Image 1 (cartoon, rainbow, N blue to C red):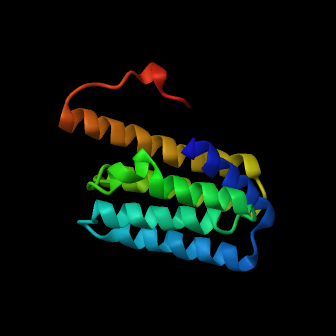
Image 2: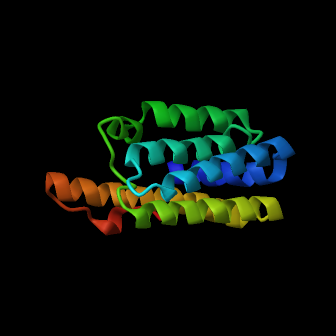
Amino acid sequence: MRSALFGLAGRCFTRTATPRAFERLAERLTHLRQIIALDAADPIEFALAVGRVGAAIYNQCGNPTLVHLLHEQGQTSLWGFIWREGPLDYATLERRTACLEHGLATEAAVRSGNEAQAEAHLRQIILESRDAVLAFLAETRGGSVDQSKLLR
């Protein structure tokens, strides 16, 4: 659900973003680059910065209902709860770099007016993070995930 909501926010942002909204998104992505440049980047700091990139998009998407849903979903869902336990993703440079690349591709898509690409990249950020979190939980807590039951 979160990936679909973020994708929709990306489409709305592409249609309605102001120059200031684009500027804020660029600032947040610059901050991600700065964190990645650190040799020992903190996964929690990176995850929070990724959240701020997402918030820069959904808070300026022009759809108050969508803003409310995404905010509440992050605060009250199981996803939000398990992230408060500790770092579940972005422990490797590879994961942080992949997320940044999707963020930069999202920025390029919204600046060019390509709603479909903005949606696709935002959805991919969420889905790849979900997959990384599930792999981490399976590794640290035992068990496995039936990949056929995951929505794409």
